[in-house]
Every structure is written in structure tokens, then in C-alpha cells.
Length: 383
Image (tube, rainbow, N blue to C red; front, side, top):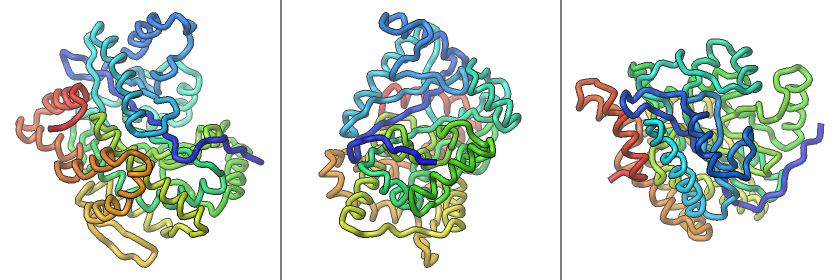
């Protein structure tokens, strides 16, 4: 099987931000996606009745809407694109008493009571995955970065895998599940990998290895189309991008920009290495797997494995060194300010830490946690 890789300018950006719809009175998830889209589409007469908005899309569950940017050249441009769509959704939500928030999971709404969007592909997913599929009440942020050659796709993917725990720790925002503290920084990370073809990617040496894998998956009926490969980091041949899907849902536009900048800078640095004839170090799969678990469990307190020689380090120490190393790249990509926002997350703590602090300050009551998440999204940044 030959899989074409779309044309994409190096290091162009696309960002996807999954939003949770919550009832303004109760703080519970509410299945109002179709109602909001109906209002939004009325304001766009060029759209057909059953046509999706180009930047605001349905997801698996009716309590979710996804904001999708166009092709952007800078992180600032992507943030402005998301901000426009967010304002549109917020205005529509106000008509139905719907607030917006984003974190890896909802702190207390029960997973088994969330209606599924009426689409054939979602019905097929639930039918196949049964109980596990019904648990996917999770929210994430995905960042696409353009590659100018498919030959770069797996060297870059393999390089990004080394930084899996960095992204997971920074974004971890799902300590609670069905009202219970799981003890993990990211419940979402371990839950999502239960779906077929989800979880850590295979680390192929080249594109042909990937083509053989896809052929096998289609021949044996595991997938019907490439998009059903749900790896945490994956190539997207139709777009000519590498897609970073590691991150839990992020509560503010500022945080989304920080993660987008870190992703864009890393991909550009790997591309520079390859253009110069260099190679990108990799780690054995067992180290990669352990790093994912450590970051999901301990978040910013994780001691991570750095290399194939089994050296270890606190993830925040390695992040700070990484940010310094990427500063010249960020300057070239005009995202220095957004990359610097990563340091803010390290200093004030990740989402899982804030949620636990608010719950503790309110005697374990999780409603104030939701109120804070709604406020954060409305304000767009933390103080």
C-alpha cells in the first residue's frame, strides 16, 4: 500500500481544542451540542442544514464541541482563530444556559450518562468498544505541525515521543473521575489508550514501515480508514502534518498557545536536524511506556527517563533546559512569547494541581472546581 503525504509548508500550524458544555446552574455536563450548532449555523446561511461549521465541530458526545483552526503560520494567528470560534460558541451557549470549560475530564459528571452524537462512525465505535467506548468522556488539545517531506514524518514522530512526558505533565488536568480522586494527574491518558489503535505510536524507521502497518490493519479489519489510527502522536497523511495528541484538555487560551508553541518549536528543531543530515535519538519502547505512566501518575513531579542509557531527571528541570534550547527556534517562528508561557505553567502548577487545591479549600466539594474552570476559560489566562 502506498500512502501519499499531503503538501504542507514546514511548521505551519493547526490546533484542535475540545470544549465541555456544562449547565450553568448545576455545573453538570449537558448534551447541547446540536442546539448550539443549530444557532451558530443559522448565522451562516452559506452552510447547508446538515453541513458542519468549518471551525466548530461535533465530537463523540453531545456534551462536546471542538474548535478547529485553519492553517496558521504563527501561534498568535492560531490563538486568534480559536478566540473567534470560542466567542461564537459562548454567545450561542448563553441562549441555552450553557457554560464552557476544558480539562482532561469533568470532575463529577458520570461517564455512563452522556448521550452519543448521532453519527454512523460514532455508533460503530461504541458498538465495537462497548464499556470502554462509553467511558470516553474526555477532552484534549491536538496540535498539527506541517512537514515538508514524508521522509521526516517518522524521525520527527520518534523524536516527539521522547518528550511525551513533558507534554503530559504540563497539560495533566484530569485527577477526578466520576467524582472520585484517582490519585493520578491524568486519568485521561490511561483511559484513552483502551481504545483499539489508541495509545503510544509504533516507532517505525521509515514511511514504508508505516505503510505496511496500515495495510495489515486494513486487511485484518482493525480499521477502515487511516483516521481510525488514534495514536497519541501520529502522522496525518491527508494534511501533510504530524499531530501531537498527548495533551489533556487545557483550560485557557494562554495554555493552548504555550503547548502549540512548544510543539511547533520541537518539530522545527527536528526538521533542522534532518535538513543538516543529522539523526534524532530514540528510546526503547519500554522507557517510552514507563515515561507515559510516570507523567500520568505524578505530573510535574515525575522523574522521567531521558535516553536509551536510562539516565533520569525531574521533568520540570528538563523542561526548563529544553525551553532555553528552543529559544532561537521560537524567535525564528515568531512564538517567543507563547513559548515563554510554558514557564508560567511550571511556576504556578498544572491543571490537576489547581483542581485539587480548590477542592481541598472547599471541603472536597467539586462544584467550585467546575466554576473555576469556567472562569478560566472565560478570562483566557491565569493570574
